[in-house]
Length: 242
Image (cartoon, rainbow, N blue to C red):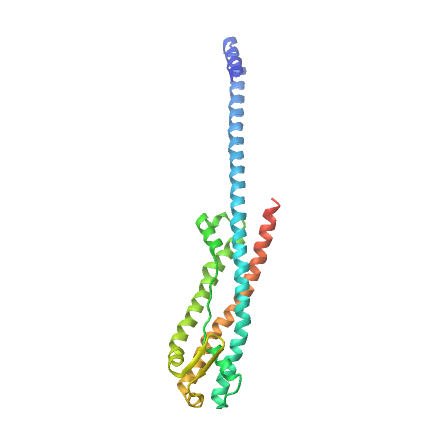
């Protein structure tokens, strides 16, 4: 800086105004370039920090998604058995078939409702930080759609099944069954009398209709989650090499 002042003074003292102006302009340009470089370096540093945070949070989201997918598959396997038990139980009652070894096993499967507990801590972290931190716009939209619509709708559907269980089946469980072991067996006080109870049969049919929405939605959630995992995995892999 002292050298620049000395050069500037020499131009002024010698009366070479044009050279001074040219030098002054050059000095301004150099200072401007220095400021712009400093700003750019700072921006690069901030971008690097943001991408690191993005990678860390999305890695947590990936862990949550894989756990949710396993949760959906567990429900899917259980739902296949429950759907069969509904069909067998309703058919046995409507056809007036006598009880056999499997009758009360299937009833035990029918007189239940699903429990869903999904870990969304990664997405909560993402929302707290700001969804804009996801650098891929398409992935950002997919994540928002998945958690704000599909996961919430699935959770509400689960609550609806529980509500319908309380509305359709709970009173029968309390009044008509002497033993009801969750998802294992349900033994009525009088099976022959229960076969004649049209209200009970109608209630099971109505409850099955409600449960079917959950069964179908579980399969949709498997497809959606698998697709989202693939997209997120590709994004994380790309970020890991940058």
